[in-house]
Image (tube, rainbow, N blue to C red; front, side, top):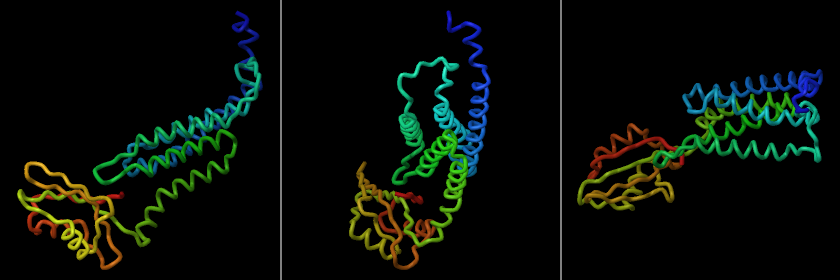
Length: 249
């Protein structure tokens, strides 16, 4: 019962222990704030991972990192260290674990993939917490600002720079109608689109063929918008129904 003696318990409230706890508390508070800053952008755009997720990830990463700054104070200073703890193993475990969390927010909806930016920003939030935990406060603040700026401004830059936008298209043809791929590609090219390589898939049920593919804008004339494209497709011969949606593939 020596471990429960008053002297042993008092070691947990010694001046060095209190000072270390204050430093840890300030680190956790700062990491929480920085995580909330990054998470606000995702919450503002209605993403599943918002301020709470980012705040917790950043704060927890800081917590499991900062304790390696004072191994001599572990367990009230009673720990018997045969070897020095290796923080690199902890950092590796943090980033690996956060990778699984990020993978959980990546969704595939038909031909479109969503959640990649959120997954990357969660991983960035864990790195912010690690920087706070090891005491690189200026670098943590800079990474927070860069992460938030990247999510807010780079999307606007992408819209400003020339790019190839994509449209996920699902077309169901009338019964006994036999569509041809070369005709589809020719019509798409005439409208300023081209079929993305490897995106075409065909299903056949109840005598009706259904084509799934991604059309991306080509470098020629300005391609019609999705609403204009819908008006064109409604008049095509053999088309019974269709579905259009913006996508990134």
